[in-house]
Image (cartoon, rainbow, N blue to C red; front, side):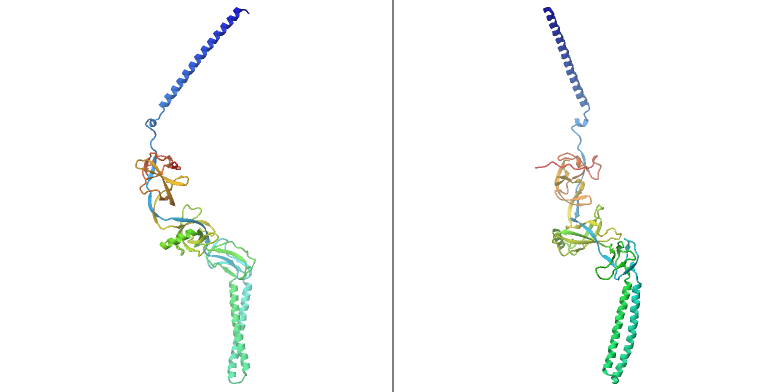
Length: 425
């Protein structure tokens, strides 16, 4: 290739490069213009979709329901766990030995005092009674003979017809006959008792358990420790409830009793309330009737007992329940709905609304629950306006629209869990 050809190729390459740079510059300029147009269009759409509320300065204050605290005379209560215990419990055992002849109840039924429960074969005991009565007749006959002989001896002794020794013999025979009659009479009474004991009757009113022995088995009776257990009866109405409380509570109750005889005392008679495991509240009423005379040194507690009526048999011996005992004299307290209480770690608070409609948290000391109201022991004034509904939408220092609790609704949304106020230093 010559010099002229080389120069021509270089010129063509420079021309091609110039065209390429021109095309790239055009594409860049076009891309920048498209991007600017897109940004302008997005800004325009955002401006068109802006709500009137935002243009006006933000959303309106949240609506909340408010109420003033309720002032009421209340008591403090202590709660304890305990068990029901039967007032009376009897193990049915035979007093005489023999073969069980019959069972006259259904397992688990209620029985009344005097109801026939078991019978033991009475034929051997009837024979013993007949023999004892025969021996009594014989003893009475011998007594009549010796008595007549003794009376004749008295007359003969006065006339000196018989010796003194012979008279003493007749007198001894008469006394022996009297003793024999007394022994025979005792044997008859014992035989009658044994025959009576072949019928086992309920000694108390209550509910009987299942039979432990079937008819035809030999039953061991008597007063020894190897007698046969036939069944168990527990009384059901009334019924006792036993529980324990600590030494500090005992001292508090005793000191209250010295100030107010209607409060808890060792003599009992204190009203109590009870709640079963499926009850929502303490709906069963009773009275304490016993407090033990010693404190258990192993646990530091003392045993107490309350009595409850149980006509329908709802309470069963051995059943667990909770009992509530009055723990203070009556006092005036402020109460708010329990749903108005918020939590910040270990502290409790309520939201109040000031005269400018601003929500302010107040830390409070809680008492016990009374229905759906919670006792406030400190931290709240009687004229405070408390937020009772809508706490989930409230923050400290936020302006709100309060509505009275009995007025029109203060907005949608119930209290789904109060937000705690910010921590303060």
